[in-house]
Amino acid sequence: MKQHILIIGAGFGGVWSALSAARLLDKHDRNDVRISLLAPQAELRIRPRFYEPDVHTMLAPLDALFDAVGVTFVQGAADSIDATNKQVTYRNAAGIPSTLAYDRLVMAAGSRLNRPGMDGIEQVFDVDQIEDAAHLEAHINALKNLPDSPARNTVVVAGGGFTGIETATEMPARLRAALGETANIRVIVVDRGPQIAASMGDGIRPSIIEASRELGIEWVLNTSVASVDAGGVTLADGQRIESSTVIWTIGFRANPLTEQVEGTRDPQGRLHVDAHLKVKGQAAIFAAGDVAYAATDALGNFAAMSCQHAIALGRYAGNNVAADLIGVAPMAYSQPKYVTCLDLGAWGTVYTEGWDRQLKLVGQEAKELKQQINSVWIYPPAADRAVALAAADPLIPVA
Image 1 (cartoon, rainbow, N blue to C red):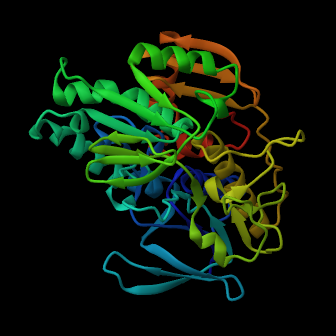
Image 2 (cartoon, rainbow, N blue to C red):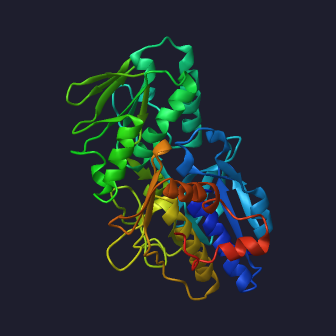
């Protein structure tokens, strides 16, 4: 019977784990190992683009690609992991439970937005999953059917981090497309920070401030959203903002499946892994993408929850899970280059390099780079075996 590599998740970490494992097995001419990937859909959902309109197009089918490289897709949602007996319980598309045994497992189940237990949280929108972003898009497009009012014309974005900024700066154009160019729109970012984009660093902040000013984005600082109702939000400092559209962008956590694997976790629930991305304390489980707490270099930097790191983590995890199974030398994960490419709507984009975010490109020049990243670089390769396997080499730089 063939040995079995099982990968949970069809996000960036999972897809590139599958391709990289197939690459190493092909390189060593091993036909005695099979690769399966378990996920609800055979598609890579391009999550970094969910703040944009036309979100239903932000996915890439995977069936032909998996067929080309010999990866078996299993449709279903993982429920539990039994590390002792090396098996995963899942529910198929019909909701019927089943199990998959494995010899090696790659956890690549991704992360989810962490919604707090706040009054009115059920009325809040987000751009976390494609269904959530599509729900927001339908809501925005339907605003024109409501009477003209400050609440109808106002969007409140809770959180001034990366996702919050990209969502907010895209929103003026989306609102005008829905309500007309003459609509008296407002986009307000509510953030706990003491200054605009405080968490983004001084190198990038001036561009965010300038873009906010030109786009008419308002920032309410040193406070947070305390409750939401049908008419708007009440802030922790008592302020009231009338709004029919509140978007939550604060707090991401690793998939709860990580809690079923014995090991050390960071505050976001990510599993600590060694240099080869094997979960510390586990003999047969690797982790990639947003569930992995992995050192990117020897300087104390760790992978962020981003496709930039998930793609590379997947390439290394897939290579190493196959290497571990067939007894060849693994590769130590290394990703010393870190970049930030922050979309600022119609104003443009700001591009930085390094963990200290050294400014490199600003405005439309950076916007062209962002569009290249979003529309080409982060998509999976063509469904051609040779092309796909070559693209999965861990030594190919992501950024």
